[in-house]
Image 1 (cartoon, protein in one colour):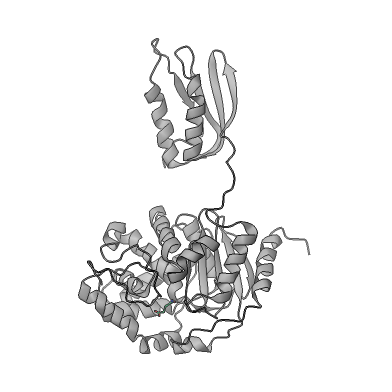
Image 2 (spheres, protein in one colour):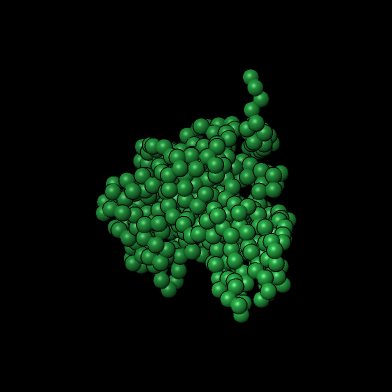
Amino acid sequence: MAADLRDPVRHALDSVLEAVRERTDGAVASYIPELATVEPEQLGAALASTHGVVHESGDADAEFTIQSVSKPFVFALAVDALGLGEVIKHVGLEPSGEPFNAISLEATTGRPLNPLINAGAIVTTSLMRGDTAAEKFDAVRAGIEKFAGRDLQVDEEVFSSEASTGDRNRALAYLTRSAGTLGSTADVATTAYFRQCSLTVNARDLAIMAATLATGGVNPVTDERVVSENAARWTTAVMTSCGMYDASGDWLVRVGLPAKSGVGGGIAAVQPGQFGIGTFSPRLDERGNSVRGVATLELLSERHGLHMLQHHGVPLSPIASLEREGADTVAVLRGEIMFSGAEEVLTRLAPFVSDEACLVLDFTGVTRVGDGSKRVFAAAPELVGRAPDGRARVAVRDPEGVLEFD
Ligand SMILES: NC(=O)CC[C@H](N)C(=O)O
């Protein structure tokens, strides 16, 4: 068989899984009795790129219940449908520093502190479209299926097990209901929430779901837009501050990938603009995060420099060359120009602006200009005005329209 260039990525995943396989500490969740019956040795990981290729390793196809990994995706659906302003009337955006099932309600407003602890997730689910639990769950399921790019089933055993032992979650629902932040009755919200947590997925699904956030809301495998770019960014931000519960601060320093864990053993992690990773291994640490999943992401991040705040060095200058065209100076620009690139172009070229000649900004070789930078460039010719003889001091050459807004 011909060598496959995709193998090095799979090899990186294989090698990390081999390294973390020796971790046999932790225990499968048992507070939901049905979860205690899973095979604890399972271990899988998948990485989905923002161009839609999925690399898998180990038990990447093994199914498990999504549990709390569903929470950020339902938050994304809620803010996409209702807007951030409406959703935050019901649930806050502050890390709680407390366990997932804590009674963390803001003293003054009664809002749960954030949408990724149970109280906040139950409220978020209650805001979904529909009146009944079935309608709300249908909206949740349809949305999560778009994130995963395939149909998903409910594990009915886990659902019944969770529903019959879910009194703490019911208590959270009643508390938020009495505080006026729940969007439905307690029963509707918890029934929809228990079904949401019982949806079955695999590590591959979680990778694609996370990659959908990484691309700004478009599923890179199906090419379908699932949520708006704003909704994807807000969600990734909440995952950064609250995704790993009371381990979120430690996680941000060590791993540096916005992520969400679930007591089914799954973790979904996002590297904005680059990829999503899904991991699965059922044994959990005392905070309810998969032991080997955490170890996998830690090692991957460390070996391959995946921390979102990793310093990649100062980017290549966007000014490729300066050329003369008669009396005029043409600045040949290149690559992707984000805010700091725009700042560099305008600052370094400022001395070339004069009454005698025109400074031409040539965007022909530029592949992309960030929206924020477009505004900076668009203002330039007008800000510098015209020379006394009426000639433009600065002109823009943009045959591909990279400065246009979508
Ligand atoms: N951390 C989790 O995955 C918790 C989800 C679980 N369904 C619960 O509500 O208890």
